[in-house]
Length: 270
Image 1 (cartoon, helix red, strand yellow):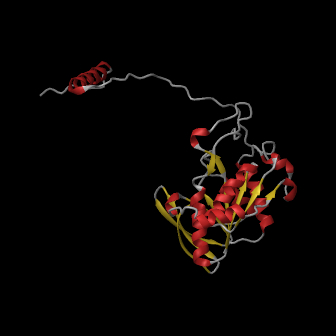
Image 2: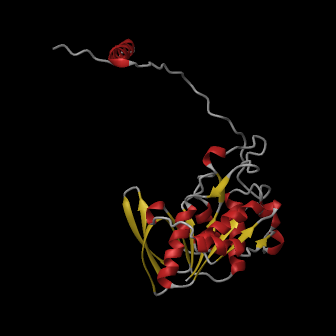
């Protein structure tokens, strides 16, 4: 099987900052990691390769520093990687991102399966995977929790839904997005880290892809962030410190009085 795994380098959750003028994320100087949910896509792809043979190529779009994420995936066991990096890609929404990734997939050539993470932790939209499938015009299954069979050019999967599991069979080539229930993620090995360090990862720009530059980056994104506001605390609270049994009794009495004063406690006579 020829498998492609699109991944994203994201800021650590505690380091997310937004530019109030452009409505885009400030990535400069922020500590970054491979999107945690993409690790499950990598693991799924590696298990499919182990079972059916073939190759796994990891694909990412981002600044030059995103090369670290690609090499981490190679250290986990992916065969090779490709990075899309160009200033014109910056600020892309999910539509422009999936458009650009689709152009890179076409450049890579024929594939059997694309395995993507459920969503990215920075945008939290879960739209890039489905968008990529739409651009490539291939069957799609989202929220895949289990792969049952791969045979005769078909892939049988189980989707996680609010009501339980949904069984689907897709004609290959196809794209799936996976949830973390699908597998436990392996750690990079020492041999893998050495191979990743020595790997040459091609870096492509917009000039290397068959794309309409008007559809790239912030300028090509139909989604616009009009305004960013920090949530405001609408009401305060009261904290009661407790020290010893006497403090516990006083705190309980204070709580009961609070509930009575607001008509939230109904007195029951014995």
